Length: 234
Image 1: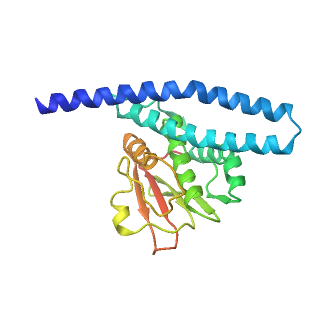
Image 2: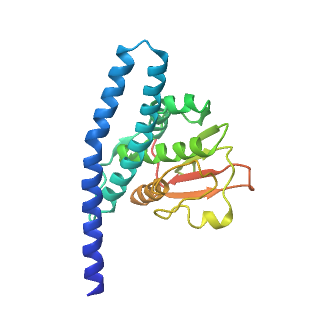
Image 3: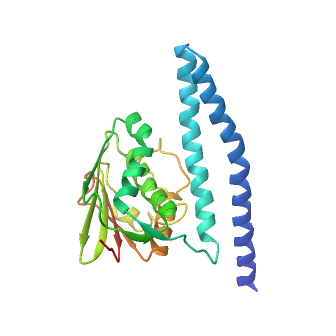
């Protein structure tokens, strides 16, 4: 009886989050369009600055809503990925290019090293790109002067993608919980979020039969999120 009750609550929660995020999406889209029109039609620097603030807040809110929506989506059972042969290096490059405004805003340095092409994965490009985006977004948020390195390499038939940053590092207690839904590491109170980003990343990796590990050499030495995909073809 308790199990049936919990399953019902879970379904209702997923339904609520789906409806909530869709209801938020329409006004957010209108805010984005209105901000773009303001920027195009004004030459007043002050108004442009205000529009820039609105746009920045829009991006933050949309990112959080997308995380809730995607987490609810992949938590539904059964859930099937839309897998095709994809080039992981190309996906990483696309994510970095799409996040260039955020990278520039933080005056960050993001370098991609290792193989640039050749390897392919049988993967869901949409969810994999979102997983990469979440990890990079976290690094940008928690590093004050971000220097981020994304390394792609092959080892024994597997593909490893390492995201290395120069942030504050993560202590051992937080490492045990960092991939749990709604867990937020309070190293910086100015960083907002629901604590769903890394939980979503973990879920996506599991659906790809892949693994993710968090490594730090010591506190204040940054973090390395290491993703291992089991089978790679040339």
